[in-house]
Every structure is written in C-alpha cells, then in structure tokens.
Image 1 (cartoon, helix red, strand yellow):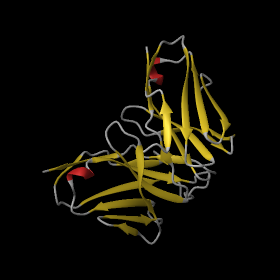
Image 2 (tube, one colour; image 1 turned 135 degrees about the horizontal axis):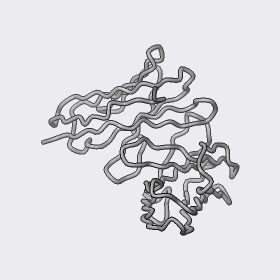
Image 3 (cartoon, helix red, strand yellow; image 1 turned 60 degrees about the horizontal axis):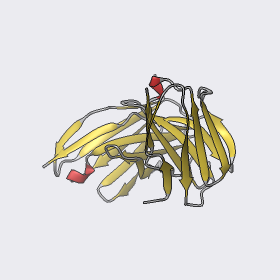
Image 4 (cartoon, helix red, strand yellow; image 1 turned 90 degrees about the vertical axis):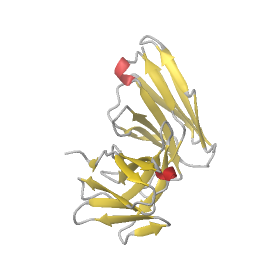
Length: 110
Length: 114
C-alpha cells in the first residue's frame, strides 16, 4: 500500500462547480498534513495546511479525519485558474520525513 | 518570486559527465531539501539538511552527492548518471525542520541524461 494515495483524476468540471479531492495515508503516527498546488511545469506551492478541526480559506476547505486516515480538499465555485495538480502532503513519519501523494489533476472549463 | 532560486533551469548531460545543481534560498531558512519528480510519479524526498547538517538520506544512490556549505546554499553533485535519472529536481527550504513547517520550492532543474 502506498504511504499517501490520491485519485489521479483528471477531474474535469465546469466553472462554478464544487469539486472534492480525497487523500489517504497509511501511517497513523503522521503528524501534519498539507495541500500543495502545482501548475504545469511549475514548482509546488502551499495551498493550505490541514488541521484536525478543519479549516477554510475562501473557496477552499480542508478536513482531516484521523480515525479513517484521510484528508480532503473541497473547492467551491471553481475558477479557470484553479486548474492545476493538487498534491496531498503528509509529514512526520518516523522523524522528519515528507511524503507527497502523486497528485490529482483538475481541469476547470468555461 | 525569488525566495528560492535554482540553476541551471535545464541541463542535458551524458552518462559520463559530472555536473552540479545549485540552490540558493533568500528567506533566512535553516532547513533545505532536494526532491526528485519523475513523470507521473510523486515527488521523492532525496536529502534534508538542517543547519548545514544532513538529517535525511532516503537511500539515494551515491551517484548523487549533496553539499550544504551554509544554510543558504545547497548543491547536488551528479556523476555517472543513468537515463532513468532524468527528472525535475526541486530544491525547497523551510524555517525549521519540524513537521509543521511549510516548505518553499524553487523552480527546479529539468535534467535529461542521454
């Protein structure tokens, strides 16, 4: 089983749609969780951290479910500029170690 | 954005060549990282340095040799690479090395080994 798993997609959605991504992780001792965004041929950039209580940043909502070992990202009112690959990142396995998921591709169409 | 810079941006090398990738961070961070991103595969953490000391080496082949002369600079020395080493090599930095730290990435060096 992969340490961090994501649905690779692609997700093709119209502008204004709501889309949700899930990510599962295998190590229950994982300590911190993030969503990064990577545009085509660009470097990853932090989108948001994920906290146990769930957190929201504008149109983006991230949630963590430790019991089921998954995190989610919800994007409301999708924009064309949201088209990118969304990377799930899990930290803290056996000391400081960062594990990236393979990413979920999102295409938002006009 | 010029927080983390990498040179060169593109590199083509033969299997017998020796080359070096350079990373510089202008953020005052103490931790630096090398990642490899191959096509359709997740980013793979290669090395971690914290206050110039290597704290993580994810079983990377010895043909990749990192060097961290100070907290702002990180090098990846390459020698006798294989075609399967062709990938995007990303450098990142963070303030500290704790699991809550946000990592800031450079634009990467796209490497092709012939």
